[in-house]
Length: 457
Image (cartoon, rainbow, N blue to C red; front, side, top):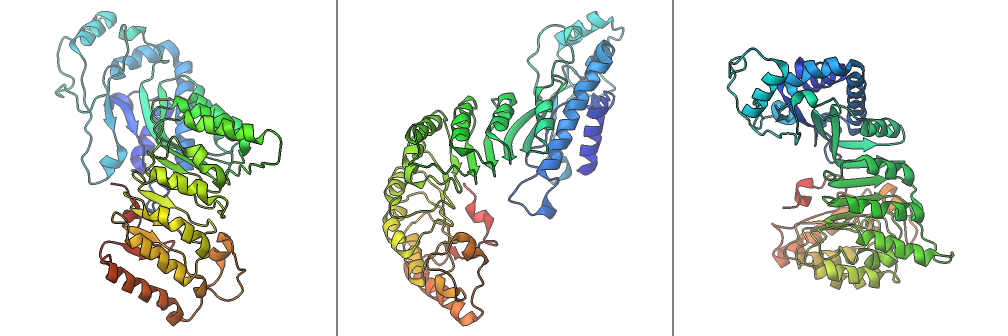
């Protein structure tokens, strides 16, 4: 795999058309890196791949300008009109290999012969049968000789990971015309300002983006208000992640209610969302207002690290009521859910009809609270996985009455195995009584629970 990428990248960066005579038109690099796989299993990390691809695009653009008309005449006979998809992960793996098709329409061949005074009339090319397998033709018009290097020759389908170190390079790559074009399905950005993210979104092909992941960006309320309307331009956007963006809406400040309404309007402008991750967004009391349009269509909702209290629960329960028929995964990890709050939430949790995964790790529940949660979970026929928190009785002494998720994550558990085994024994008995011991996985292992169980159908 690495040798294949090296060959392709090197050829494009050198603008070596002799190597690209394999009729490469689309290079599919999507899924080569994934946050859910172990580092040793990843083919290449997302940041390195993004930087490499940006260098490829910039080099191709620079070479096309440098070589000019001579390169165009020499290269278009070899590439234009012949397109196929190569997916490196399929070539390297055990799946089907995507073959390269060599084909030119008869009209195109006659026009090429006329324009270039071709002397050969033979219908074959080096004995290779003409044909197309998974060919994606460019929608171009006019003769081959009329097309310049501003025409896109190679489309690279990829996932991009952009931070403050690579932002300027990626921006240049997306804004420069040339023979190579980046098409982004999944965009992840970290530590960027709202204006920098907006500039990036303005250059992406709008028809391709499926997932947007914004992390560790101090957007503030004004930044989010700026970005949300821009997302309406991406018709295929299905997943939005806003992780640790720290809005901190202060209701006692002037114009904050108007700002909240602007955010709601921005969310309404986005169509077709199926997955929404709002980790530590700090807007739990207005979730229903923000998400009312999307609630009945969401399949995945992550509200982890949003601090809940009794004042916020009515809005949350109203949201769950709207989402109960469609939601498949719900995460409330680190949300300060105590026994008292859980008692209020349980009727709403029990009403879900399609829920497959429920996560409540890192919440300060007692052992009795954990058992109440498991009892409600066992009553949801569709549920396959419950990730429950270690009960407070299993921690070493010294925790405050209402510990934060960070404290629960780092505080040591009791060393006596008998104490920690009590909860498991009680949960096994409960599942056996409810007839769910074989089809419902109940675990407190935050790091090693099976990710396969959290996949959607």
